[in-house]
Length: 127
Image (cartoon, rainbow, N blue to C red; front, side, top):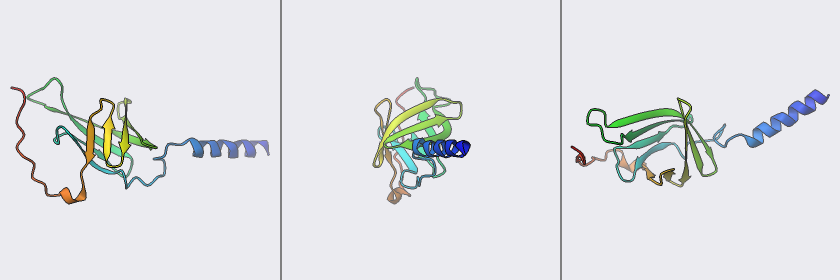
């Protein structure tokens, strides 16, 4: 009998302390978030709690200007935690349709009306 009570208490604690993305509907947060300063950089949050992040290499590299990261994410309140495939962790704040990363850069969610947007030609800021 004690084992059953202990197992029930453990199960209740696990459910209460689990991140919000566990079993949650992520359709409201899933989508493509474009960097406010450079819309060639993006963060894609999928409904299955996985992500793809494409960022510009710093310092600039002409041959390979972007890095791509993948992994899983968790949402706990307004805190979005990106868990990279290599074990690294990055956090930011998700408020409405704006994700703010740890460096303070804003990533704005691409709306569904922007499907066929033609982007202007990007000018290289390095040579």
